[in-house]
Structures are given as structure tokens and as C-alpha cells.
Length: 267
Image 1 (tube, rainbow, N blue to C red):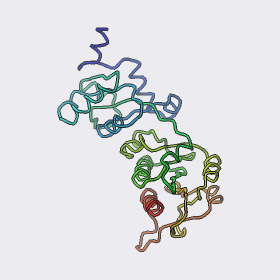
Image 2: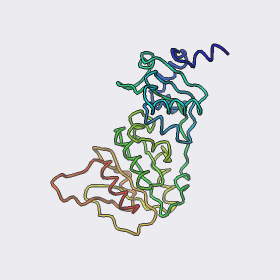
Image 3: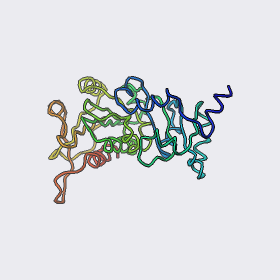
């Protein structure tokens, strides 16, 4: 027992198993197999602690306690998490994935969502955001954040889309990944469920029709940053929608375009 207590006080080092775990969870295949991910940074871990997700263990650097915000976060972690490793700054930096570590990381369980969870909010008409091979983690996180902010019921990630639990995607989502249903599935399963649940399938595309009101339940599909929505998906949608552009720019970033279209659908 004394050894366990000592390992949780400042000056501790991570066990070999913990070090191996952190290295492994930087790989998508391992995250998917193990059902766990790493959250790193003060804001991200604050959002994680405030969420219903299960946190398995955490590690902090001594510098986290230099400010009131860091001390408050450490207190919350110690209340909620059974294992908190308090490390020196040098030891923490050895295991952090970011270039400028903020002194806190946590390992948590990836939530399991079903397509039916997209209707759990009971907000009608429901709107779902579908991501077709969106590969940039910053765009992905911003899209998830926009979906939550604008009242979408959740997000479906089709094959080719970046892993939702990529560290950069988590940071860009600013906590929304911990609260919004995120479902990774194939187009066939997604389309069948959406149609069966009364959703109209809309694909964002350059030259698409401006959105009109009264569409009822809608699934907005946005595509890869370079190629757009895939041909197979375009063939099966009910309508392509777009944003009339008055300036000289020919297109918008996928995250910006999706936010505008979601606003039109949810207002």
C-alpha cells in the first residue's frame, strides 16, 4: 500500500505499462481496438472531467499547480479519478504528445454510440451532420463543435474520415466530442437508417441549390476537403445544397460551409 501511495505523489514516474499505454494510444488502430483515447491539455481535460465519460487515469506535471486554474483541475481529477500520477515537469514532458505541454493528460474510454442515439435529444426537426472522408483533424473537430453549437443531433463519420479520437481532432472540438453522439459507419448503413428515420439526404456541393425552409428532418453531408462528397453518395442523395457566393472566392473551407448550412437548417 505504501508503494501505491508514493507513486501518486510528486516525483513519481509512470510504470512501464503506463508508458507503453500512452505510446500505443497514439495509434488509431490501438485506440479502436482498446476503446480508449488520450486527452491532453488544460481545457481538454477540464471538458473531459465535466463530461459523463469514464476516465481511467491521469498524469499531471508539478507546474500545473502554479496557477489557481491548474490547482482546481488537479483537485477535480483527484476527486473523480482513482489514479492520478503527479510527475515532475521533466518526467511529464517525456510522455506528453504536444510540443508545449500544459501539464495534464488523461486516459479515458471512448463512448459507444448507436445510430438511434441521434434522436435522443427529441429536438425536432432533427438535423444530422454526415462527414464523407473529411481528413483534416482540425476541420473534423471544428465540424463537431459547430454541430453541437448549432443544435445538430449528432455526427456520422463515413469511411476515410479522420479518427474522432485523434488528439488534434479532440482539441479542435473543444469538448464537443465528449457530448455529441459520434458514429463511425458505412454509407449503406447510414443511408438506410437515415431514410428509415425520415431524414432527407442533402449533400453540400458547389453550385447546389440554396437552402429553403420546411425540409423536416435532414442529414447534411459534407465531403473531403479536396474532392467533395464522393460520387456514390451524390448519386443517392435527395438534393445538393450550396451557398450563393457574392465575392470572388470560388469556395469555402468545409468547416465554414457546413456551419453556414447547419445554421440554415437548424434556425
